[in-house]
Amino acid sequence: MSDLDAVTSEIARALKPEGIFLFDTINRTLASKLLAIKVMQEWRLTRFIDATVHEWAMFIKPEELVFTLGRHALRIGEIVGLGPRSTGRTEEGSRTGS
Image 1 (cartoon, helix red, strand yellow):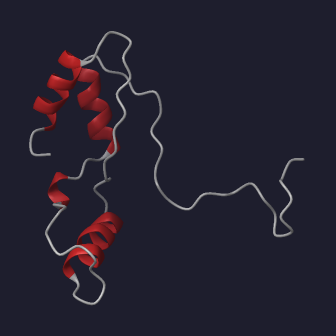
Image 2 (cartoon, one colour; image 1 turned 90 degrees about the horizontal axis):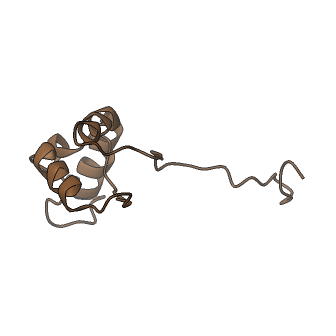
């Protein structure tokens, strides 16, 4: 988004007291630039989006998001990144810790 502060201000204004705001954003990292911009959008052999959907400069780092939400009296409950996750299963298929 081009104006994170303005958007966050409107979210804080519209959100009911004790309301929950769920959001999804892409972290501004070299890996996100490579995957979301280059692989998905720009490289002819790998792209699967014909239009320019993402602009890397508009991606938001978690610390920027936390700071801006805090300025508008919104608090973060949890930030979870997207990436490989353990399934909690061993190679034999049994659950670990059981």
